[in-house]
Amino acid sequence: MTGRLPLRPRRRVPLWVTVLLTAAGAWIVGLLAFVDTARTPPADPGRPTDAVVVLTGGSERVATGFRLLTEGVSDRLFISGVFEDTRLSDLLATASLTDDSVSPDAVTLGRVARDTRGNAREVAAWVAANRIGSVRLVTANYHMPRALLELRTTLPSLAIVPHPVTPGMVRLEAWWRWPGTASLIVTEYTKYLVALARGLGDAG
Image (tube, rainbow, N blue to C red; front, side, top):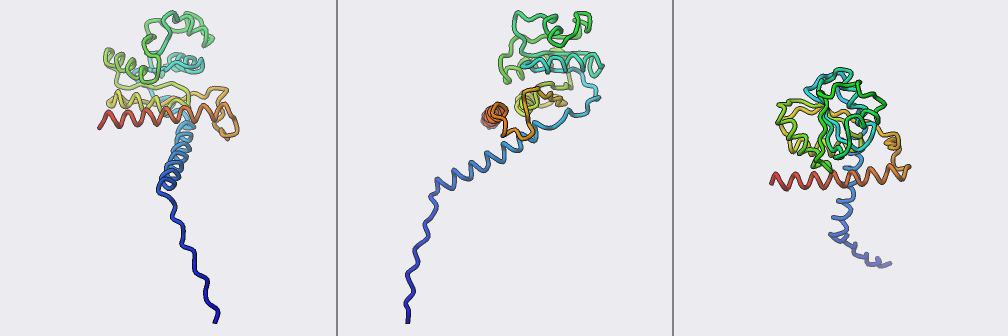
């Protein structure tokens, strides 16, 4: 009678490995969801709002804000994060517009904000001072998730219509194949998670 060889005991996976793999999986799933959100096109392009709000960071954003203003989507435009020495005529020039393209009274330049959280505070102050109930938010597509998070945290009662713009150098289709875009997406996603964690901490 042939005896059976003793079975080797199964090695248990260390708890830290399980935790690490679970966290990595959640991070990847969240990243993919983040990219899908960034791909979302502008919502209700013709829907009017009390104001158009642009967060600076690229000429496409400013040009889109002016276009929405001239198309009558709103009769007020607030541009947040403008440098102290930048004039309205400078911004019009970046959008290939002349000084008489829009009424200066329709445009307000916010010069205080230097980051997305600062944008939210600057917009909040302007919204409160002007009794604005709804805005169309213009920023880059990859920046929109974090911008919405910061604004909705700061202004929970404000109706916000996202209007993302697509910078020419950002390639969201097969983004992992483009080192520049991949680095940008991962960095922005990390900032989004930090903002989310901060918001949860403040709520707690």
